[in-house]
Amino acid sequence: MAKVLGLREQRVQFFYDTDFITDGVTAATDTANLAVAQKNLFSDARAGNLLRTNLQGPGQLLSDQTFLTFAVRHEVMFYTTANSTTWSGGGLNNIAELAIWTLSTSTFQFQVDTKIEFEGPLTMTPAGGGPFGFVSDSANPLITNGEPSAPSIYVLPLPIAITKRQAIAMIEKKYVWDSIDVAAAINAAEVGKMMRAYIDGYNTRDVQ
Image (cartoon, rainbow, N blue to C red; front, side, top):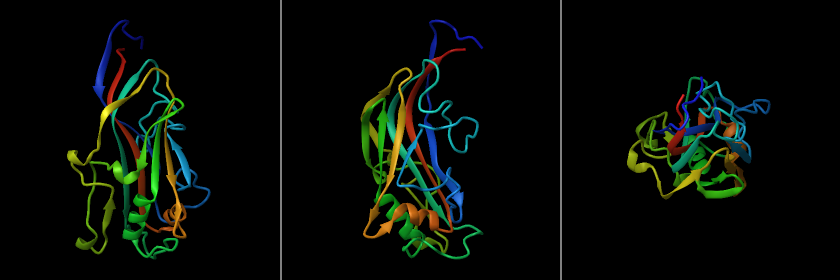
């Protein structure tokens, strides 16, 4: 469909890409869900599966779209499932330790074009939405990154602008600390697990 010349629309819409979403031990051949020391989200996003991403093209917004990023968010969940028959967590003792180590020893770098615009630990960018649980209130706890409420979202004092056809990437890094390889522990854990990165803000696009 042809676009309407001279007319553009602005909408509030986040974009996301998924590091992993799987259940049970992750095989080395499952490259889509394998936790690795570094993975560049958004760079290789493929349209067609909204469970994983809503970016329409790899590494950039399509057409003449622009975006003002007001928040970076990370959704991280670990939970027991029917397949969680045994525990193997790469040196960690339980799901709570896996969640804490993952959040505490993983970092991100939000890159626009060739510059790192925003970086830090995952704990600084909670999801601000989704499931939430405490270790002490259930035999099968659900551990997430942040309480599901708007105040949990860290809003940037100044927006990060993505102009037309600029490359974007969320560089996710998982470290080895105190002899614990966090990526290996995630892959070894026989539980449900998910990690997504979001950029949240105002999207401006052509009207068609």
